[in-house]
Length: 252
Ligand SMILES: Cc1ncc(C[n+]2csc(CCOP(=O)(O)OP(=O)(O)O)c2C)c(N)n1
Ligand SMILES: [Mg+2]
Image (cartoon, rainbow, N blue to C red; front, top):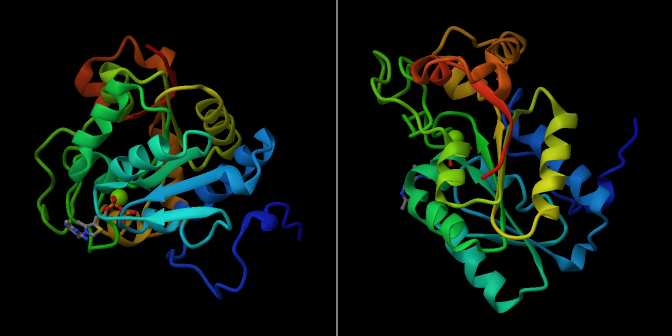
């Protein structure tokens, strides 16, 4: 077994916070590979997260500076840190609930201000850590702890949201396609100003279990089947696009 990224990990943690089949660990691997390619020294890296399963992706795993902050406030803390230490490459990694539900206003205003941050959103379409409540990213009809008969509301298209707010670069890929995710994270970090990567990171425990896909393999296959390239989605209606994961890169 090769453990090429081990040098980036804080040793001695004795386990993982993630459930079997959680996509968040694959996202951690993709993030470290992107950082490794760019060659940023660990002393020059700051990772900021909020609260939730996804907030455990950088902290405590990565052996660089990590700020594990309040729910919904990762982008606000990262903004302050960037102003205080502009030379630090500052990367927010957190969940869909954290970044776009409770933290949605910080997200759009950081994009508008073009704050020099990369925000990586691990989108599992649910509040995973707190028992599977509906998030603003939950698809129409998906069953959750708070919508057992199916969510009646449309989800945000996070990439379009941040592009509309002024982001320099946005991309969406599932964790079932790690090379594309690594490329997108690398591009986002290398692009000055506000950049955003949405990683579709399935949650078997809270989402799959309630939505006919308790098996991890089945859930990952379902995610893959729902992926459609940005170019092919252009001819779809808005409502059709909402039923898919429109993947690719989005620029202003
Ligand atoms: C102010 C505040 N409100 C609510 C909570 C409870 N809470 C903790 S994590 C979380 C949701 C996290 O969801 P997400 O960011 O999508 O991460 P996931 O666990 O799905 O990876 C909530 C509602 C909190 N900790 N603080
Ligand atoms: Mg979530």
